[in-house]
Image 1 (tube, helix red, strand yellow):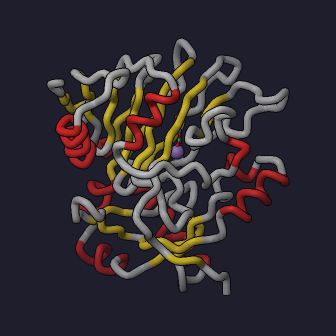
Image 2: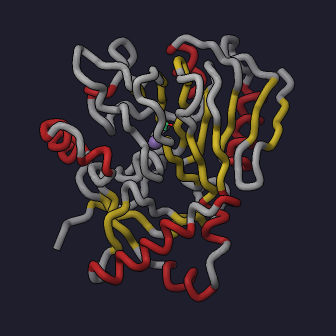
Image 3: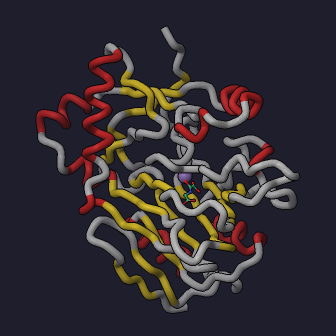
Length: 286
Ligand code: OGA
Ligand code: MN
């Protein structure tokens, strides 16, 4: 297979063609994909009409799949490795993931093995809308002043799986389950990417609640600045989906957001999540 990689934006992202995920992808091609992923942070593979088994098999080439962080209720009924990101009612109930990711976040940053990558496969989508935005957290870090970088260097911040506006609206039973599966975790505010060695900002509006040791006011001011700083237009790629795109992103150095759309139209996606390196510690509220 000969891979073609074409950049999609100034901020981050590249389109990858010359690969067929319905075939077994040879090891040297996987190595090239991995290299492109580390370089571009978000890879778009268009036209990959693959069954869940192939999606899972391709994902496994990049690490262990994490089926647990959101609990059994979000899983594909036949494939526990797949999380359903969908607005289709499930078992007669509104889907609990219909508003997944409406705020900027990095997948499973609230866990002690936060996701390296996520691979999202688009199965059904509205005619318009339902885009996903990505922002480059290396760029966000690099654009800070040296004084700010120094201040942030040794700070930790608390990540909470139930913090997003969407999560807070979930059924109380689901919220309690999420809290139990994912106790509060502190993560470094500036994270060194274990593979590239580059520093990236690692706080998000969706999941970061406060900076450890700061007063509420201090924390809100610093985090508010960082949340806004991190999502400047030049850092961003906005993906307009086509059916059977698979998009693979690196959560260690990019955040993403699911843009709101007309929810009367069906949008149905399958996600695999790759378990990351150990990071952070269990946070005990004072
Ligand atoms: C996700 C997510 C974004 C989207 O799958 O992790 O945040 O656009 N989804 O559905
Ligand atoms: Mn997400």
